[in-house]
Amino acid sequence: MPGKNIFVFVVCGADKHIDTLNFSLRCLKYFSKKTILVVTDLKRNSKQINHHEIIDISAPEKFTHHQASIYLKTRLHTCLDLSENYCYLDSDVIALNGEADKIFNYREGPVTFASDHCRIDQFSPYATNCGCLEKSIENKSKLHDLIKKYNPYSGKEELLNNMAARDFYRAIDAIKRNPISNIPLLAKFFFTVYLLPSKFRYFRINENIRYDKFKKLWIDNSDAPVLYHVLNYYKQIEKNSEFRFKLFRTTWVDKAGKNIYMPECDHLTEAIYNKFGISIPDKKWQHWNGGVFLFNKNSAAFMDTWHDFTMQIFEDKNWVVRDQGTLAATAWKHNLQNQKRLPVHYNFIADFYNPGNTFSKEKGFTPDNFKTIINPSFIHIYHEFGRKGWEIWDAVENISKLLLNQQIPEIDNRLY
Image 1 (cartoon, rainbow, N blue to C red):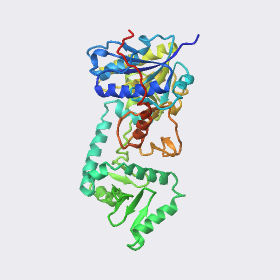
Image 2: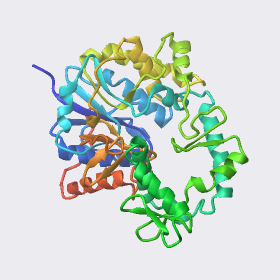
Image 3: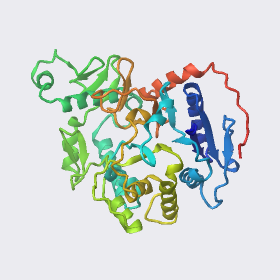
Image 4: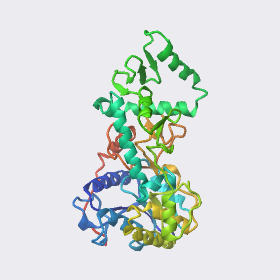
């Protein structure tokens, strides 16, 4: 007889993580018919987990709550009955439709993960203490000081809280993807702003946003300011700094030509080789995301390696305390780097800082400005959880409102 299919979360400590888990639990209970377990160290929690199937495991006292969560996550195979099949979910992974239970049909090999939303070289500055992230932060700080100096709208509350700027950047992204077909639109902008008489004051880039050439400002349909565009001041910044603005890429780069807002490096692959003797020759490998994965009795060897590697980096000052860098090392050690992965709709990663990662009522969710459309069974809100006004969060919250009338009895009960 095949084992049961079971979902499992891990959480420890901070109230915000318990609140996030409780939100995700309510959604999963609504959409799933499977057993749901929560593994935690109860003595670390000050808030109640709204669930009755809880496994209480003590993590070493020397660990922070963050370390304890990783400790429990990477050793789940030692505290669960491996005659069953499991789907691990980060606490910020939210079920959105009734296809959630079908994730168990996609098991491949000893473990099955989904791809992350960035490559290993882009993740590298966040996984190692190599200094690249700090350099990027330093450059961003210098650039923002210059923007404050030359942009009269910098820091204005009405711009900071106007989410329509995301709509503007999506329109720009669409133009960049299809520059030839958008030549007429670009020509119209040029003629309206620079050649036509003053009575032609506005240029509309889409149905929601237009450019006011007198104010040199993008505004929405209520005339609220959306964006004071970089074209108005980038030359002053270039003249007074090492930074350069790449017009077609619409991004700032440093003197080495590297994107200031998206640091990348090879230090993680170097750290993996130096620490574990594992070579990752593909420096732009699309690494796995640790937020959703399938495992069972065939996963023990993989999980043992992942846990062992992760415990080793806890005491290594060259590494940031995370589990994804060691996950990459484990995947390559077990020669699984090319294994088939979970479909994207089982771990749709929502990135607030990527305007092309968005939602519309007419089309749904997309990772790439509607080049592709995703109907997520699970959405991964890995930052800006609860950010009202963000179109993705608002869509998730609207779906969750369907659950408000669900009366799900909750008791505090330990299984083990």
